[in-house]
Image (cartoon, rainbow, N blue to C red; front, top):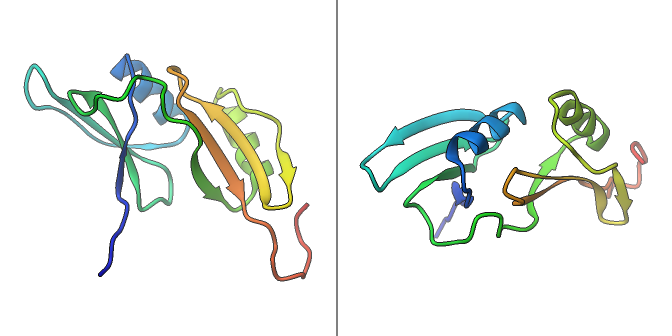
Length: 128
């Protein structure tokens, strides 16, 4: 049996503010559909990702800002840090840990994200 995670719902208070934030952070705005007065579905996809996020109205009962440490893998933590800063996104300094290099940020509701540059397990060096 194969299972692919393809959509994660992110709870937000202001759909348009959150959509603007994620687009500014580099996510592609795939869909924005008002289904009814109770349901609005906005799908956004991080660049290069096979998994998207959904924000909207009537999608989840989770409290806005309740997601903690959604994690994406990046090739270069320093380049990702510089890119997000250049886009006006507030990020943490790059943190070096034995299991990778991390950059963290939060959306306007406080949903927290972590970008991980995987360590070089080959022993060949390259990277910090």
